[in-house]
Length: 110
Length: 116
Image (cartoon, rainbow over all chains, first blue to last red):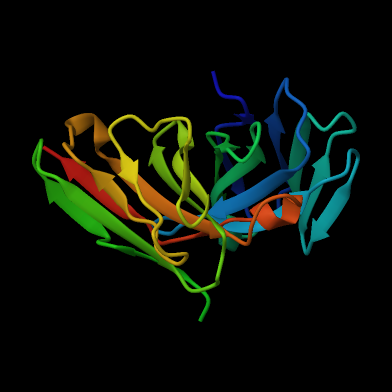
């Protein structure tokens, strides 16, 4: 069982559509990170959310940390083919260990 | 250019033949980590290091060794590789520990390892 559950596992949409992916846990985290990984490359950090209820925006991407700091969501407005990739959430698991979710594969078709 | 480098990028080896994957960062980061990535399982932390001579187990340390003799280098050693260690491996570094922003990871390009 994953400490961080991501959904959906796979999402295929048309250019211009909106979408939301989720990262859920039964544990409380002090912070949570989102990364995007493109084929053949390492993950790249998008954002870190720290405060319960926090909302951060990165151009067309909106990140929200749940009030109870157990979950987070990533919303993409007007998706573009360049948004295609694997989206991963990550959090600290006790001390200095880091744990990742299994990821959401996003494919945006033009 | 600030970066994390890994070598080799691709490696095919046989069961039992010791190998080392090197990792180096030029950002003076304190925290370094190794992950393996397998389909459907995401990234799983193998080992991490909070500073020179300080290493600790992640979630899947069995069959791996690491060392941190210098701040910039964090090699991953497989003393006797087995087929279940076939995977995509990533090295990552971050500025430090404590504040959440200090855990933001910078990843290397990955090493695809196949053990036959």
